[in-house]
Image (cartoon, rainbow, N blue to C red; front, side):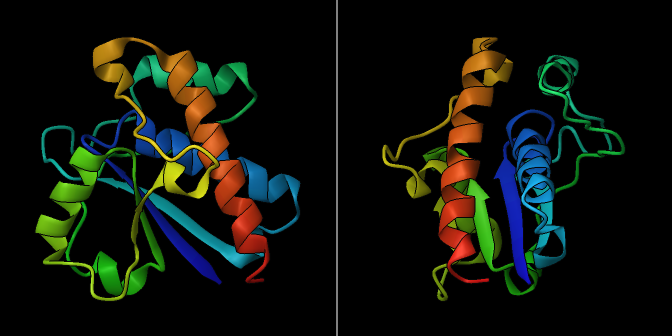
Amino acid sequence: MIKILFICHGNICRSPMAKFILTDLVEKEGLSSEFLIDSAATSTEEIGNPIYPPARRKLKEHGISSEGHQARRMRPEDYEKYDYLLGMEQYNIRNMLRILGGDPKHKVYRLLDFSDRPRDIDDPWYTGDFETAYREILEGCRAFLEQMKNRI
């Protein structure tokens, strides 16, 4: 089983979108039993909150449910639990490494590091551009899944 934790600042936009998008992709491929997928925040400000309404609407547009999500903060013990800890931007990576105390097993990446064009995914909380965030997260999730299929 491949265990993935998606991380962004508040765990109400990008990381839960990634969690639900990848979950949808693996379900469509019949690979759900091969993956454990979750998401978390580097901050504490949104803990317990559901997915942000514009993010929820964007997922719903694509037939993806986001029911049951509650924001949580990343914990140091997540490093041992998950195989991949995927941040959305370099700022997330810096905060993740601070929380984790480092990355000795090389588990920490940006999601789009798996794509043909590694880059940050801007936070739609600030940009208001949930369409671009959705497309970039989907791009990253597809690229990540293709690489993981070689491990199954």
